[in-house]
Length: 143
Length: 143
Length: 143
Length: 143
Image 1 (cartoon, one colour):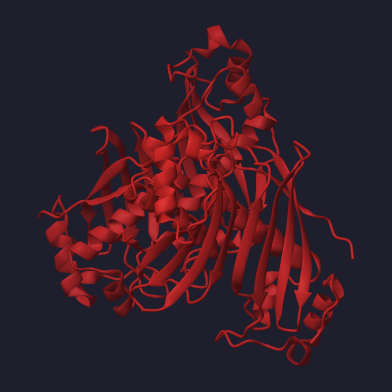
Image 2 (spheres, rainbow over the protein chains, first blue to last red):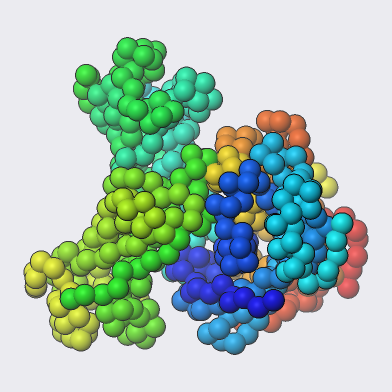
């Protein structure tokens, strides 16, 4: 399944005194790209909200390779690595398009919950969303 | 009325590629000091929330004098400049305690509203909060 | 002089517990739009840097009208309001394109300096940049 | 080796529309506590800088347990988990002191470099810093 990766330029206020994008901002960039990815595969935030779903973050990790600098253009490629019908994890590849270098690799894990933060089994409760995730998950794991 | 000004050190992640605290962060520092000031004069956030009040920001401005750098200690002195029973404005003096220089002067204006964002006249509805603001307001204006 | 206003969607991490974009983030949005504006009129950051120029922020102010919420699309229209050959001020109109409402109006003032933060008279030192600012300044003031 | 953990309250601007501290801010909180820890064990930023050292972040990860909310007080306990004379990793335990719950567990890895980002062997070049890290490292690994 192909999709157009998320792209933007690094903002001035994202830099730190080393002259590079501060490492904490990558976690924000991952979120931006995840929201963009979910929108592109048919799960815009408005749908998630209308269904009474929440997607809290359980964990996040980033390995930093080559820094982004002010105004560098970058893309983030998202991939659903695991999905068990409730929990899923996303892998992120951040490429610096200005330098051509790999900037960072990230991972985050999440679960679908209702508004009381009770985990939701998608297969039964939201079968269309279940199908989207199954379809985009690269390792094919199911419940 | 005396109170102990808000103090902390500048964080690394607040700096930008010029090596100084990014100008947007001063707006956050003003908020930190305002929350601290309100707590110290008897209006902690829990009280405001329990009363069903909100205090949206109507405007904010900052004049930058001498920059804060990483780890510089600073204080922020808050002063309620105007209060008409519903709206109020706060003046902030940000002093760099590491260099001894004035770092910035800020202003913000706010109003008290209920949870539907309808303005609230404190004198009638929340007389004790009205008294606190009247007492701390440096220009003595009243409704 | 026409240019295409800066546009993007509000990020999730820009919201606060009131469910709206935190007021401090508007100062960052103004910066994003200013960098975009300067690039579009022929002054990308790389040119500014190559000339040994810096453009520190002297002051910033924002009046908040109607909030931006997560994923709302907005545009920012920049206008150089004043320019005296060294100092300039920018007016920003932030329109929420999702709701059609005016979200905020901002102002910032700046000056051109060299790398030692000494003010630079553009007419003499950087006449091409002087011409760009004179051309885009809406009130036509000159040295 | 005992030290006083880093403590502060969660800021309003750190919350997101779920009403909790946004997950990206934990990476900033880890940095704050790491700077505080290094200062307390004898390595304030000024010393690191005077020695011509830099400590870039190689990776960071956070597992989120129970959220921090606005104004919750929290502490962060830092522990040097590994140290090989050049690289080191830090474990962070974020405790919500307002609720008594474990809020998050984090890890970061770093290396000591010179200003050209060339890795530095501390034992030879900065033996006093080497001794500090050896002393505080909980697993006792050495070069």
